[in-house]
Length: 480
Image 1: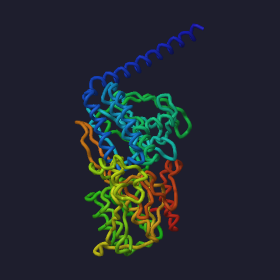
Image 2: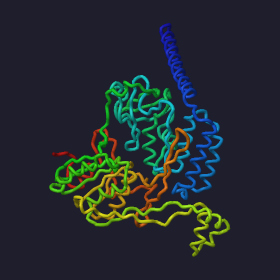
Image 3: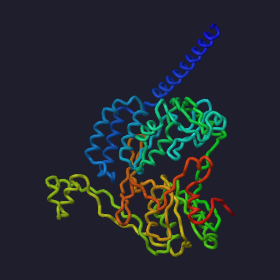
């Protein structure tokens, strides 16, 4: 009996010590926030809120989808909340949510954080990354020394006492993106973000079903960069890659449409061999965040026979102050059949837009060409000029798409300086298919929908690429 009481007292003492340690860490985080995150004054914060509200009100191309009344109402609601923010981090989160309300991947904010801010580095040597795979938040990378406790591919099932679905829903409110899959993937990757000493109580389920509880505190040390990591197999981040598969299927990975990143040189080296050997072609645009749409069009022209083909139709907002003044007394019924009155009315309501213009791409006869049965692979992160590439390719009979729906975000962003340490951009250009179909905010669906499964991901097997090879009668096995 006495022995049991001793054990109980020791357990109680240990619990109290742990509680004291956790409380000390929490206090340390609060102190750090107070001392390092109070650079913006209340007046600066209110100005930043007002500046972004105004710039979006007059420049955001999709404001008609939001509605001026809703946007103005949200701005008014946020004024006292901004005034009440305790530090710059609270204000940052509030502004992220304000921007994310627009639900557009080309409309974003950037903060020059005046303190250490991490998403993957934590105290006691913890280094890990999270990723959404097949509807689950998975550990996609972890430091070797912690992999016995939380193995690679472990699933996050709770965060700070909340089910993972609830934690994701809250984080999504801060994430920029035109479609929900993009915002959810961003939320999953940034679940553990925070300033130094921010605590996270995380519950993992290992691949073998074991439940592991870990408290992580954001921290960063130089030696973390040299730690050995266990990593899941991911799509290569190379700008250009050529592989061969059975049946002379050429696999071309284009990782960016930014010029000067090595894509041009890669194509120059690869095309002569492809012209001699390739019978079918796979172009992989997964995880390609875009770049220059003109450059994307030049690359596409190598794989299509047409001398001229269509890119997107586009338009932007316009505002004429004189028209707005003349339209103040114009009623909607007065605009029927009267373009002049319609222009006045639209300007007075701040909804005027230019007519649509159609962009065309002229095939460069000097470039090498390769016209073959082609599959373009896409996923939720196939973005921006990649989607212009998909639109231009959509009318080609020899080209089909496979994989996931694209990100649904392209356009021309206007860069804005808001206050010192805070910049942003606002999408000013609406792009649609030449026939008027909308894809921004929706994404471009593939002809053949295929998703990466968790089982295949854990076995380092690319579900989408394997399906593309099978479609071409080939196998998921590289050859020289």
